[in-house]
Image (cartoon, rainbow, N blue to C red; front, side):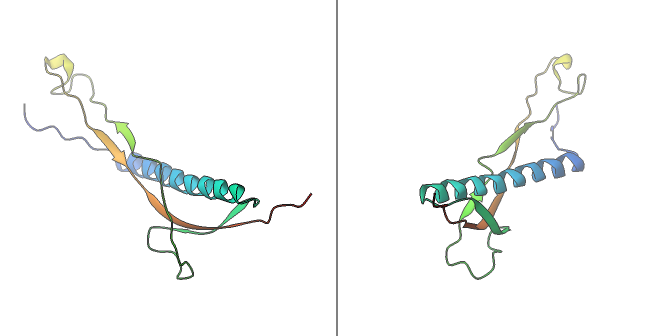
Length: 114
């Protein structure tokens, strides 16, 4: 058997990259909200979000948030393809991992006095 190479279609790759990037932004907001709540503040609002290193120069400290870990996708080999189980061999594809990081800046509302 020769070399086996796994690939995603361009459309599927773009969809998965967008999904993982959205997860990184969601994780950043959730983490910021947890910190604001612990500090007695209200709801957080995103002021700025960017690729790593691209926040405006206002920030003294940048925090990096990621998508929570690699998102693994299983590549499926079509039945009857060379090297599939129907040919007598067993080929198991490697996981395809997507990882995104973002830098973000948030502001929190003041806690309501009640």
